[in-house]
Length: 349
Ligand SMILES: [Zn+2]
Ligand SMILES: [Zn+2]
Ligand SMILES: [Zn+2]
Image 1 (cartoon, rainbow, N blue to C red):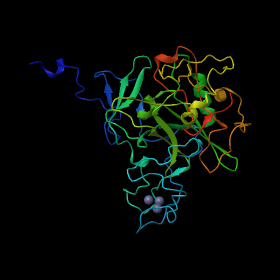
Image 2 (cartoon, rainbow, N blue to C red; image 1 turned 135 degrees about the vertical axis):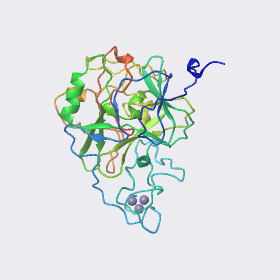
Image 3 (cartoon, rainbow, N blue to C red; image 1 turned 180 degrees about the vertical axis):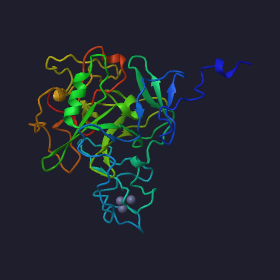
Image 4 (cartoon, rainbow, N blue to C red; image 1 turned 30 degrees about the horizontal axis):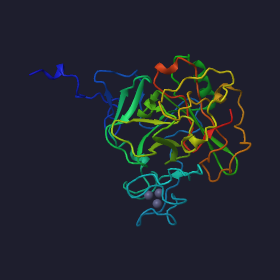
């Protein structure tokens, strides 16, 4: 009978890269492999230049002490319910590419922890695993099936100011993976809210997610205690156990059939190849040069679709842009090149 040490096939002693900070351990495959070191945080932390401390509580609570939080009486629910009875996100997106903003009940709300409007804040509930992919470095998967609409994890890291986000991207070498994501949300009345998150040094399991042109996750900005959005990833379809989890760094999930970005010229920049393997793969990772350019407000989408609507959630037209660093050779590294939240679409390049 062989000693357990000699039978490395089974992921026994799982290394928990979450260091016990999530509800469930985040294991690593193959056993014995260890991703590059980084500091684990389940939630955003304030980084250089951040406009607001993500840990601060600035939203008022609702007044639902003796009744459940439901639209109409709960001030946290400005539209319809955000989640169904099984805690699945209801507005997973429609062909229109719009989604209502999501505000969960917060630290000042009197409702119980089990309030149906508290999902993302409860953290990871699935057994996630960081695993080595064939061509994309590390990837992330769930060891159980994930029904459509279910919250998977956040894309959490240091919240940065624009200057710091640009500085970090410029410091990257072609071989570095870019983890910085720029999320731009368009508010009905005009202002664009920008959030820059870098999970490279301090981040959560979401930093291991790879891009796919046909993703199974959708990123949705979700607000709990303040206007600093949590970048929540939800299952966009039913996902099988051990299927690699991915999202579209360009945020095009809802619009991916438009193919607007496909084969697009790249302004002379070298683009990184995409190895997602999807039938609809656009061959390159999404690129957004905005963080390389002089500061300028994201343009008002010139043409395009119907304009946005409520606060916080963009439809898909103007420019959500991502911080991307796309140089060739990059693939060895795990992941991200920036992203937009789901309902956005890359700006006009
Ligand atoms: Zn309430
Ligand atoms: Zn509330
Ligand atoms: Zn509530």
